[in-house]
Image (cartoon, rainbow, N blue to C red):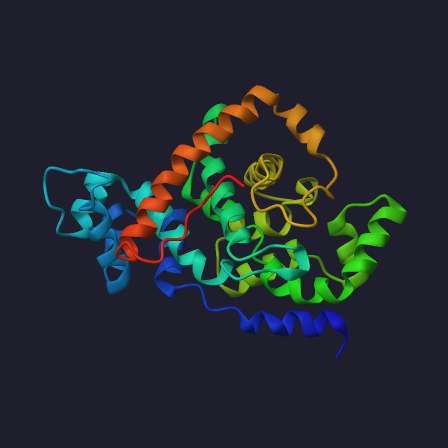
Length: 294
């Protein structure tokens, strides 16, 4: 068995993405689906339902009326916001571990991933584009391949780093040359295995090479931009954080400057507060995992 086959087989070690969330994402992509269709799916997961109701009745939202059903929760808080919270929580189960190959400590990759998810809405608004749950999910899970490839990158790190320096290529390109596959391509295969919509698969697979995406190019480009901005802000970049090409070009193409980055950081801090509140609610105030801007 060659190295690429070993890597592909090792994706089985990842925990399965919750089936109910997979189905919800498929419904979101379907223009014929309604909010009630989504409620019908989510209500079968008792843990998700309980967490949503706890959150809606928490001090953070300060609602005057006690929310007692998913339908009420969707009306009072809004479906998109609730789904973003659910996805952020569920992704923690497979993104919280350290990723030594990329020099990422406990929860560093998750912090970076949540930052990218939140930036998808912030940047979309700045660019006068419509934010979507599809974009949020793609941004949140864009680096899922690192959780599998990190072990192999650790074994070959010096070779990858040296090759990137010698050939003046990106870390991802060197990763591909040494291992036969890079984390973006591997992440796309994981997304396929989880039966995610094609737009999310494409965004994960091509987030370091948007020009190669044959479809869903806008989603791919925006996820790539979210990743770049998160790297610039210093959130969970890891050893390869500065080893990517095209940062300046992408920023210039979207007419984004230093002032935009400063505004993004401020808005990220506000949004992180909500994520922290939801985690605190989920854990009953114990064992809180704070998201920070460093």
